[in-house]
Image (tube, rainbow over all chains, first blue to last red; front, side, top):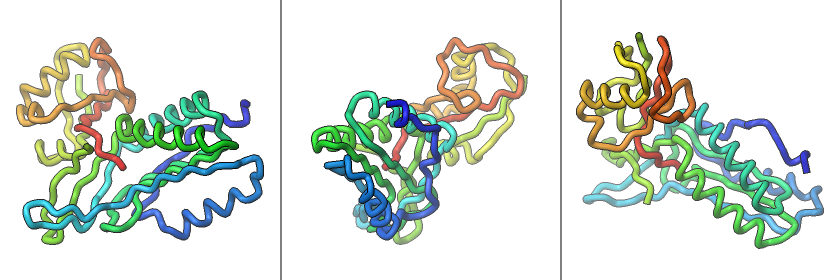
Length: 149
Length: 78
């Protein structure tokens, strides 16, 4: 299925990923009637409380060239491993407030297992391989560097 | 040779800079890694990956004048 192969596409969007853009992305798939299952992962900035201070936002920076290339490799690997129809991946760059969406992974397949398994695979691979850095900014404007657990 | 260092994430605060020129007299990426730890001992506090001209490379890579080195602390996307 060579049609599935695409050139590296930038994954970064400035600021939060809006619910409207996510809704529109879902709507855009209504014409693809070979799809029977979508799996979506959305990462949301959590207002963690650390030593009495609450996280107000995360500011993301990245080596965007390497991150786009690594995510492209992850995409290709996912298409090889699972029976997928299409895939969309977006990550925020810059500041995202607590409660807003910072990561959107949208995987579509004829069948549910492929969609679910691929979505999880992509999420874990992005966290491990994409050079993206989160700075957790507290309400008093002090900060600490996010550590993925 | 001269190398251009670009720091990311927490390393920007450890060295108090985003970009620096670095004079380098040895040859391989592994040599550079050792030189950086001597020049910036604070970097040994966290485990960093190095990329050359926006590619991950192994330590045996021979560096050239004007190569761009990314200093990447642990990733925390998502």
